[in-house]
Amino acid sequence: MTPQREAVLAAVRSSRVHPSAEEIIRQVRTTSPGIGLATVYRSLDVLVRSGRITELRLGDGAVARYDGNVRRHDHVVCSGCERVFDVEVDLPSSVVSAAGGQVDVDIDDYDLEFRGRCERCRG
Amino acid sequence: MTPQREAVLAAVRSSRVHPSAEEIIRQVRTTSPGIGLATVYRSLDVLVRSGRITELRLGDGAVARYDGNVRRHDHVVCSGCERVFDVEVDLPSSVVSAAGGQVDVDIDDYDLEFRGRCERCRG
DNA sequence: CCCTCGTTGAGAGTGATTCTCACTCTCTCC
DNA sequence: GGAGAGAGTGAGAATCACTCTCAACGAGGG
Ligand SMILES: [Mn+2]
Ligand SMILES: [Mn+2]
Ligand SMILES: [Zn+2]
Ligand SMILES: [Zn+2]
Image: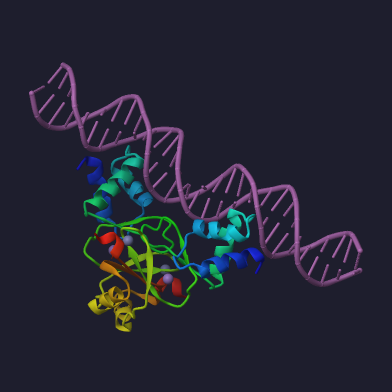
């Protein structure tokens, strides 16, 4: 762990919005102004690989978002403003085994993403 | 519907592999050799907007994949070979309402993606 | 025929991410 | 208290999947 990686990790952990790389870079540069773009992307990769953060591809998948909460949880994405909210729901294991019963794949994980309109985007 | 759009639709519908744009282009060019890249992307966009096909962002989300099956169903992705399989599971509506109860968002849809290793990639 | 307009194909452009490379640190190990 | 090795860095070029621009085309209605 280098100072740059610590700074990136701190930025991801302290954010509540599932930030994109660009948002992370802006945040990190407030305290480490000289950090390079490539270093931030490399740090994110190192942190994801080591399980300290999670990478999310939500919505149209155009940009990666990062999550400092590595406990299993799911997300709700507003289709208006694209904000991402955390939810903790539990998918009955019968659903997972039903899926596993239909294809010859050992399922070991899943991602569940809900979509809808938030209160601001409803009106 | 122009001949190009028909050709793209036919290619997506006849594929069983949730093809990417590149795979679709290759297939379409076997019967319509002159079709342009931009036309294929535009056709895919038209077909998605009109609800005749679905766009999927699976796995790392780097490339879009398309699905001629527009009935609601879910997918299992092999983390070894990245092949995509269809499954029909039903998510209890209590799970959706549990999610909706935790955030102020009117949830109207969800995507559920399972991950695991297929029989080929296990050994 | 002739106009209009939606569509097309080629190629340039875009945006997020990744790669390359010269340079700098931080460790050993004399 | 250097010397060398190796990991890590920042700048900028490169990549990749798409998206845009634009001149040309082509069906359909006067
Ligand atoms: Mn989260
Ligand atoms: Mn499918
Ligand atoms: Zn919203
Ligand atoms: Zn496989």
